[in-house]
Image 1 (spheres, rainbow, N blue to C red):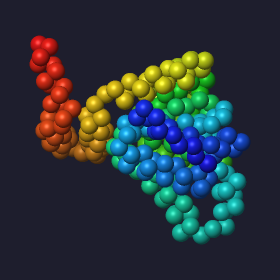
Image 2 (tube, rainbow, N blue to C red):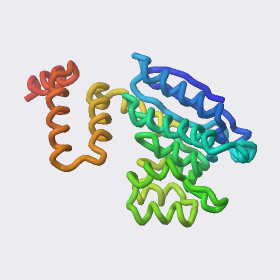
Image 3 (cartoon, one colour):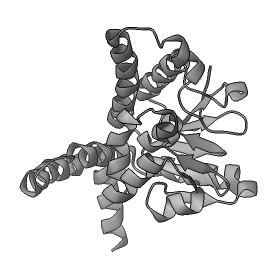
Image 4 (cartoon, rainbow, N blue to C red):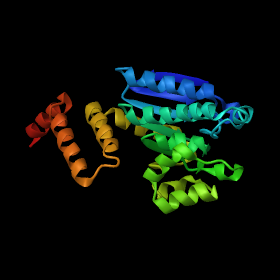
Length: 250
């Protein structure tokens, strides 16, 4: 279900159901959550990459599994949905940057999984979208992430029309961070991720925590959270070394 590898500070988690376009079955979600938790407690990890085996990143929920569960009660459906929500929350609380490396299609829950990552790198042939409306379904949990990534009207259009958009458009609306030519994607994505490992791990961890902690805060409360974040950052070893190095150069 999942391939997990750590090398040079990078934990690579690969969704490994290429024959099913890496569809999110309960088993795959559980394995992904385990890998996310594992990478969060590994002291050698500085960046996490989520990728998909085969031609596509992830096609979304395993509809065959959903069809089998159609007769389940509401409590069963609530528990299943909560598992996915808990995964997204674990990714948001993860101490390190999580990068989605998207080739092929990232659709429905697969698009939600990509946008739940802190950064998205995409091949120029990649496709993104929330087509759930076409089968009478709702991109419910992922909506909380989508509306934080793009404007409200564009978010509604994506979920109401169920349109599939290319990487260039996804980049233009702020849904993804970088687009690379397909032939160069693996190399360029690796370079980008390695550049993150060269940065201060403590600074990135504190920045990620503070950025998401500010969600829903008033301006004044966000400034006060920033005051505490600023003071804590000054006390880290990385900041002390960085400031000392800068002063010596001046």
